[in-house]
Length: 481
Image (cartoon, rainbow, N blue to C red):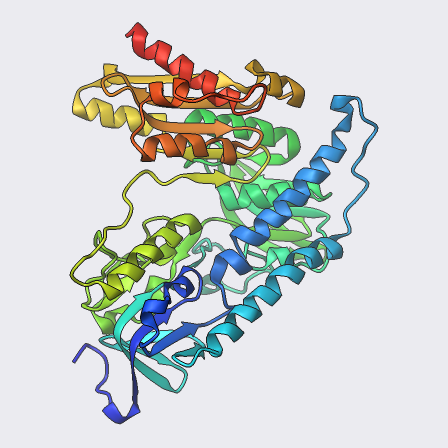
């Protein structure tokens, strides 16, 4: 028995597989499991964060914001265009009018399968491989934890943490996209990718936006040069407050006021809507993991290279295991775990290659591999600092960059002379999250920079020429060493 309360075996429903969470966890079920009895546990909308509150709706909003931004700056190209306002209910209706039926349809589909039972509610472990959902106790021969993550809220901040008093009205990324009206002045706490993407959405559609960030620049997880360029651009669009210490938040007749200390000076920021976007926390700590023998690292479920937890027969994938908070990485982990569930004697490892990511703000960012600071620290530790080559190349050096009138975008590449391979790539500018994919391919497939730059024909004058030119510049740096 595990560490939970003694259970009556008559009250337990035995199945072959329990899946907690219907984001990437929903993709675990395949035809090879047609003979299995499967239980799916979901506490909220079917489809998880990505479909309902994350990647997909935010990118639909981001594209709308891109169109609005283009209309607002038509004069750059000699066009008489303007951004005259947004029909916010129509914008919201377009997004969720498409998404909500998909979530509902996904649930109906799973409920219609003879060998699958869907349980709606909070799932918590009460014993080894045993999950309680409402009045149901389900024991799985195997269990997969795919419970995702939740918005992180500032702790011990009056007005935001119920532990120190009543809270003010505020939104997170889970709720902000379903607002009934466009804010007049949106105050954003946080400077990560969620904060910056949503600032782009509301700013482009007509809200005044103030971003409050405790760090020295926005997007502190990005390469320093990328983060600084993005911060400089954001400061032209929004009121960006850096180095801010959050003191408290209070309600006002018109909304909310946030009290800060910046460079030793007190400052109050008033707005009608407050968005708290200070990161996300894995949901491992709300699952009763201790009753199942599942070890946690903070709020994240610990897994080995195959996706196994510390409890036999229990696996974890996606945001909840703390490896990455990226949907494409969660999908990859789901493919691995799906195989491993059915092939215990032929386990496949999780992908350990550098995880690529995109930031869909304005401008976009696409990146794969370590930042320059991380790469230099690793090289210094190995005693081969001189082996590292770093170059940057501007969008404005290409014909398509001229067409865009882009004077801010650039590509940054990090490579090693000894192997002539790419270590990392960081791109900021038009369609950066698309352009970086060619470099992801090069890194993941082990291609040399020579292969990437000269082993293919690059279309002129398409935007990928900026990647070609950057690669050729990196080859020159290799050869000058």
